[in-house]
Image (cartoon, rainbow, N blue to C red; front, side, top):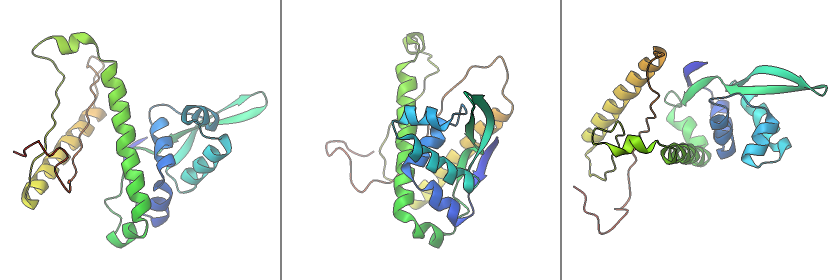
Length: 198
């Protein structure tokens, strides 16, 4: 599986711009799953799941990793073609054609990743939180930024993301697994009126 797949076709953009398909991609990211398994996990009728799997496969965003025969039925186990997908190379007018759908899909992507992060935080070993030099690092800030500052932060975030990708390629057997999650977005207003932006 490649690290990142650049979406260049409008048809791919249309197919991935669906919240349920985003959930499917998340579910098969770490482990190949069948339509039946996905149907049970997502509590969605199997025919609907199979339709979305076929659409994702049709445009080359997922593939069948392996098949198994069970009771005379061939089961297909699906995986995404990459760990992450980028729409950076899609032209603005192409994005605009599916703006609302893409917006919903990206929101769903963020929400699913937040849920997975929450789940991992709940399972944290209490020892990680118990000492002062804890490897757990987090931040939560609202800040007014100029366009130049936003660009600088985005550049730094990309540097970190590229560094993590490089580390991922050269993982050592004696290392510990860490979870990283970065998110930023502009707000129309201060989310909590009593909170002053620094």
